[in-house]
Amino acid sequence: MTLSIVIHRPDAGPDADEASTMRAAVRDAVWEIADAHWTLGEDAILVSTDLSPDYMLSHFRRALARRGFDRTGLLLVTGVGPRAAWSELPVEAEGWLRDVLA
Image (cartoon, rainbow, N blue to C red; front, side):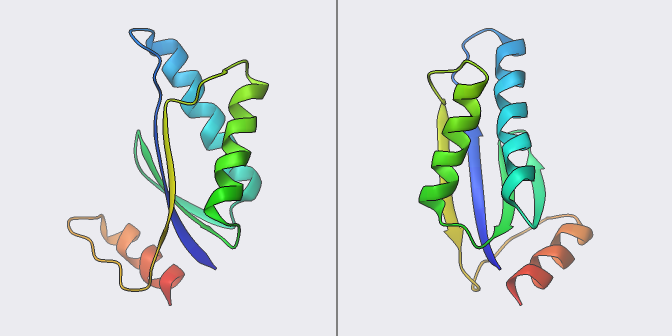
């Protein structure tokens, strides 16, 4: 499997409910395509899948459009190589990363 990081920061302005709905749409879309994933925080998800970043971006954009959003906000999908480095992740996340990158 390939590991990607998805950064999503909704451009929902002061409407926290709209931002929450946008985040939920992207997270639901991750479940549709990912063999495994690890949520790093409100705006970042590690995704294990063999799909390309371009396809994943298109998939997330369609998921947002289905919920009525014509804008995505900041949405970045990029691959993570086997030489990834990290600091201060929970022990469980480090184990998951080692397994995925092995």
